[in-house]
Amino acid sequence: MKLVKPMLLGNQEDVSSEDGWLYEPKFDGIRLLVSNDHSYTRHGTITTSRFPELTFGGQEALIDGELIAPGTNAPDDFAGSMSRFSGNKKQPISLMAFDILSYKKNAVIQNPLEERKALLTECLAVIDSPYINLIPYVYTEGEQLFNVMKENKMEGMVAKRLWTPYVPGTRSDNWRKIINWSYHDVIVSKVTHRPLTVQLQSIEGDYLGSVVIGFTREIRQTLNSLTTPFVAKVKARGWTSGGKLRLPQIIEINKK
Image (cartoon, rainbow, N blue to C red; front, side):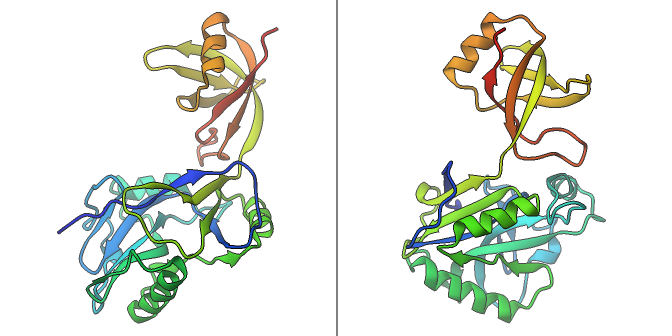
């Protein structure tokens, strides 16, 4: 079994609608590569026995997608995906497929994006699995799709440049994630170092989670110069099912 590292996403801050690009929803789950007899994560963890319903027969292919669990207030729930990954067999899952790396024993990563999308559609029709679904996409209408993502409380969307190949193991500017950030005024209640970790709470005193990523040099310097508690503004990828901010990052600190 040869594991192929998936193509990774670059970043884009502003929402766009451009010719020469397609746009698709960004689901919040676990990146997974699935074939007819095995599956594994982007880091190479074999997951075949954890997600047996995702493997398929009758068609040799390698599909790239996002494993998701259904959410209550959104189409996906990251905590549900992690629960299943950790062994909760009762948690339902599905794979939202967005690309195909090989088909009928032939590598197709050099095929243009549009051709791979067509092959993926054909492959999924043959597999006909209730657990593997095609991620929808639109051409040029990125801003309209992003508004739909916001309305449905989804993580964001992905922009992909047309007529480009799939480049395994590369973080490419041809694929860009555009995050549906939420913004919050919070209290920094505690700062610890090595590693730098910032605990957050609401104005009412409820624990909102911790910041562990995304520190700029200026933010680091400011954190070293202040004594808690103090006010900050953070951006996050929405909320977890447990009521905590999802992957918060500090964007501004009130120094007064």
